Image 1 (tube, rainbow, N blue to C red):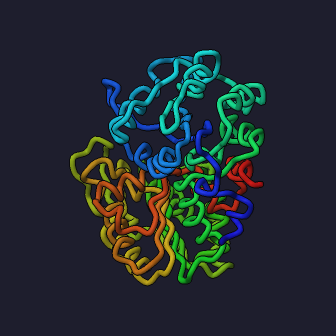
Image 2 (image 1 turned 45 degrees about the vertical axis):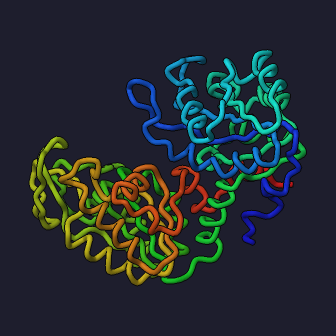
Length: 398
């Protein structure tokens, strides 16, 4: 077992019968305009842990955040839709508390019978959650005898329900989803098989500096696409017209190119691009790097770039992918991202995809079951790949 799991108890090793088990889940789900869950992936990912606890006769108390409410209680961010979807999936009632702490929450939890579920209202309705406030955590601790964290998407944040609370509860452990995430990403951090190829995309180099630097010491090839590739190409002297370029990061990009050369990491950048003059364009044009044009915007990598990326990916034994290759939400600019997804799916490699947009692309392409692991946490997966200690994981160690 990798060092990342040292001194962490699995949920199936905890004594939970007839006990109040506080489970930190990640029900931060997207909602439709009329307040329904539009993608229930995160709710379904929590089911193995929840069902295990119910089967063992636990009194299950679920807690999560949803969105970013700015002024305390804002019913636009109620967890009611997530609770309704969970009730459908479990075929049982799920009691939603009016508040996550206080007399009402305590009554609901204390009245809970064995093998039943309560869901606390949005933790972020209280400022103490994001402040990692000990007093708020102590109020949450009144609702639990056992603590289980199964919210990988939140473990990189030192928030009260993730960091302060578990340290107050002697019986604590990790849920099945969290364990699965830590094992998969831990394999890439501690013992990746080579050749190890990483694919990074998305908009900004500045968002990925730490992960690029960490990967430079581990990977054999680093493939960069998306708008962040524009900054690298501009740093190497290409004129990219009106494409998104982080002008203040050009020196950094040049430094990273030099570092890759020093470490003998193959840094693979696009050789052709799909350009248009507007984000609303209904079609794009494939051009070489010197033909973007004064009004052109690079919105995807081109077919030659996809082929070059594919060649590297098919020869890999380990693959990590974070970030799309372009504006994949729009059909004219989706081919690069979907092409990379297909190449990784075909590769005989241990493959991990992390990050909301790239995960969405994998599902869009119908390829999720062809990846070794599809992570539920973008920020957490990046920080783990960087080699950083995650507060919510460290808080679970005995």
